[in-house]
Length: 283
Image (cartoon, rainbow, N blue to C red; front, side):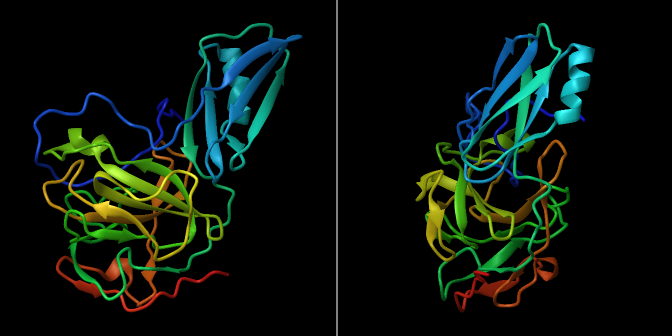
């Protein structure tokens, strides 16, 4: 399996508008220190650090076939939340030109499916802009069960679950037409260790995050301001629930249900959803 290198996020955004020039720099949702590689007494030592409050999978790649065969047995290396690890591979006399890739979460974590909160304040109502398994962008494993809400620029986004912030990008200013704008949307990623589910909130306004990586989050808590950044030509919130998988994206969209009883798979464009209560399960 080929894993793209040096990536911190895979985000599915929407359609396009606002600026004609792409940003010069792609931003990471968290800072990941490059692994270190040392040969000690014919043993390769790989030192890895996980800076976020969720498991992290790391793939180590080397062009030497013999060494890569040993690495293949270890990949992906899972690092527990906010911890480090030292991996030792014996009978390695030399090694150079390493590369690596990393993804959020562990595929061995048992997923607990529960109802989530609507990602906006109590008593607010918004319509559906795009539902499940639909065009133009909710038709891949990454985004199949995502739901887009008609939030306007600077409308408040609230956490749908408890958890920890494991990713924030909020320095982009614009959106644009076409898939070339896909990597340039602002977003927040939250991990719920109780359920193993990641939630993402995409298209935030410039400087629209109200939280930082590492923050502990309560469901219903305001976390961001909505906007129109990335691959979109309309103001809206792209919301999705995701779980870890060992593929290039690293996370996969799953269906979900809101505490009011709305099921993501049933929602259609122009449906109106109202938030009536806070009832996120804690056990």
